[in-house]
Image 1 (tube, rainbow, N blue to C red):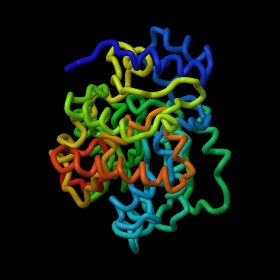
Image 2 (image 1 turned 30 degrees about the horizontal axis):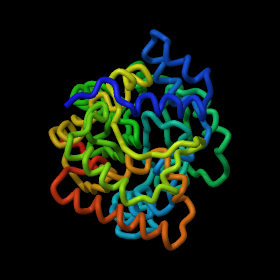
Image 3 (image 1 turned 30 degrees about the vertical axis):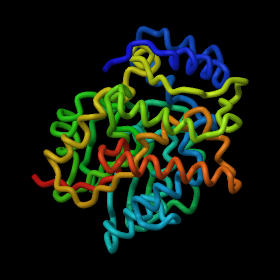
Length: 324
């Protein structure tokens, strides 16, 4: 069921006003869709309301992907799929501040790493963070994927939380990604692959709201506000398109398109169906844990694990090989 306007639209708009100022809100009234998308990402400030900043969440992802809470997906990728390889050329689209790409550039298997993104100041942040630990040559390109014209081919195409921002996924993969990959090249993703425009099914909405009831009120106080999160209403289509026309525009097509054109080398689900939205705006409470908070998170983890037994994960890490 599509939701065009919800209560959360007004709550989130007010939250963005408090966190990022009036200028950010007014930027959303541009008639240029790319400009609105750029404004969504042209920000380097730490947003403590985001669930992925919780260390226990990161450890959970590591465990579900690599089997070890201390080994992240990039370390797992290099150890299990790039071992003994050299002179690899990697390109990343929608790289943002390139924190993941800079981490990969520390490994000797890469000769160069290219980052492509539409947000210039996030790429500048990446340039400022380059140091002697980075063994690969780094390139930063401020351009849209739709305008980018590669002069070479690559061994690895990498998307981290960015592929779900691109439209017409089947066409993008068939006509752009496959041609720029070398023979036996790899597509590596760490992505949201759930419902388009975050239009979650009713059973998922119900599960998210059930999870909220496990969180005591004192831990449901919203970030930088004197308001409490009592219910999750979901995102309205109108606000999503105004705020960022690229957000989850064709996310449900990601896995079907990849499975059609690539051989799956490894694919690991790590949930997010409940945790992402239950903890939105309140996750800062759980960045530092005490026994009570740890128990709350454990209960939320159990709820999500139970939900995933019957439903496809909203987030997936995958390594896929070009077959043609």
